[in-house]
Image 1 (cartoon, rainbow, N blue to C red):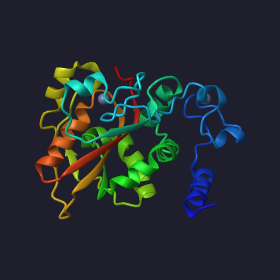
Image 2: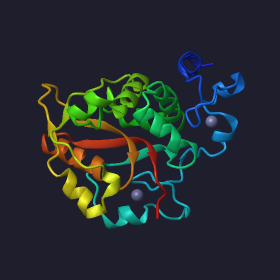
Image 3: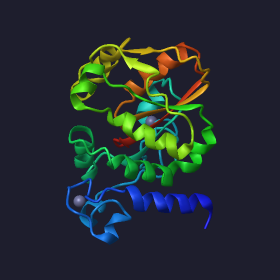
Amino acid sequence: MTIHRKFTTILRKLVYPSRCPGCDALLYPEEQSIGFCRSCHATVRYIGDQVCVKCGKPLEDNTREQCGDCSRRHHYFVQNRAVYLYQGAIKGAMYRFKYSNRRNYASLFAMDAWNQFGTWLNSLRVDGVVPVPMYAKKERVRGYNQAQVFAAQIAALMDVPLYDRLVVRVRATEPQKQLDDKKRKKNLENAFKIRQSGVKLRKILLIDDIYTTGSTMDEVARSLLAVGVQQVYCLSICIGKGC
Ligand SMILES: [Zn+2]
Ligand SMILES: [Zn+2]
C-alpha cells in the first residue's frame, strides 16, 4: 500500500458523511465507504473519461472530441472536469449541500473527484485553488459558500494554497438557471473583481458547484486572465449532459 493510498483510506473513514447525501437516510456500515445508500448510489453517475475535452460533459459518441456547445463557443478556461452528472440522488445532495448546511458532504465530493481526476489535477501543477465567490450579503445569510467548502478540501488533497479571497463578487446577480444563454452572460458582466494578492499566480484551478453552460466559470476566468493569470482550469461537483 502506498502512502497516498493509506492517506485516502484514513480520510475516508474519518470524514465521510454518516447519512446519505441523496436521501438523508442513515448509512449502513457497508454503505459508508461508498458515501451513498444503495438505492441512491444506483442513480449516481460518475463522469469518468469519455467527456468533452473542453468542458468535461459526458459524450455518448466517443469519436467526438468536443460537445456541440464547445465547438460553437470560446471558453476563457482551458478545461473543466466534473465529478457527477446532475441527475438522480445528486440533485437532492446538491440541494442539501447548498441550503441545509451539509458542509460535510464536501469530503465525499472531494474524494470522488480525487479518485476520478487525481492524476489530472496533479499534472496541472497549479499555483492555487480559487472558489467561485458568492455575493457577500448572500453568503452571510447562508452562512457559507458551498464552492469554497469544496475548494478547501480539493486544495488540501492537492497540497496547494486556497485563495478564497482573491475573487470578489461585487454585485448580486440573478440565479443563472432562470436565464437563457445570452442573458446569463449579460447577468455576469463585470460581476467579479480580482483583489491584489501580492502573489504571482500563473495557473489556477477554479472551483464551482454546478456547471451548466460555463458562463460563470468563463466570466471569472476572463477576469483572472485580465490581471495576468496565464491559465485557468476548472473543477465542478456536477454537470449536465453534453449535446
Ligand atoms: Zn440515499
Ligand atoms: Zn464541451
